[in-house]
Image 1 (cartoon, rainbow, N blue to C red):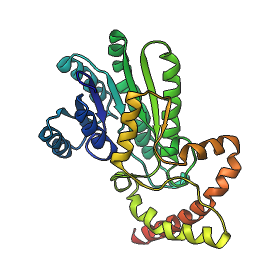
Image 2 (image 1 turned 180 degrees about the horizontal axis):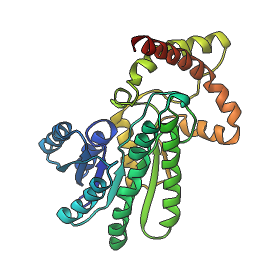
Image 3 (image 1 turned 90 degrees about the vertical axis):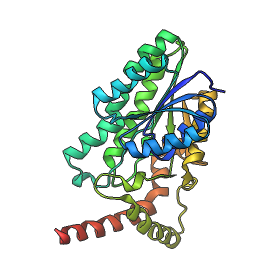
Length: 294
């Protein structure tokens, strides 16, 4: 049980962040949920409190340095300790590389990468004083593989993985753990809040095309488990809190596919060809429609 422990979860107003907050509270931790959407945060908090959980809400945009650092400092001032920091906040985008603007690159890196320093730096100060702690950074399979039409997000999540690996080296034998989590598809509103437009239509329209191309060519699609409920991913993260690991893969087949890509990148890319072709077709259609509307 996590009684007496304090955990911060960013991106806590929905999806895996909200589900993890509920699990941590159920395990006895005092949970600090942080996100930009205050109304959604309060809804989650009320649900946790109705079950007897101890939860605090902080409206916070972690891409803003003062807010992210303040989240950590205020937690310490109010609760006196910090045992678990889950950097879960993140956002994707929908654009080809040539259509990705400088503003989008800056925005995507601000929330997915720069925020890691903003929260981790002050957290480490307190955790080192305690001699214990666990920092968990939620990346994505996009942090291990290449995917089309969200290059800034892919690059940012690769940075998240590298950040965590470097963090682990600096924390060796300090009593503080660091983990990177690499989920595949999760049932959240992530796809609806991507910059450049919702990816929900992009995924739903490309799905049948991808399957058709794979069938026509007699090809297998990447052998990675499909979309999972946020609660399942949250449980995997909770298991890692009890038994710390360097990397957590939440979907069956995902770790094996990453290992294949590391050994033979071209072979792994061949599995992804139907995905690339199907998504390219839909992206070009969407782009033409947008240009006609403008």
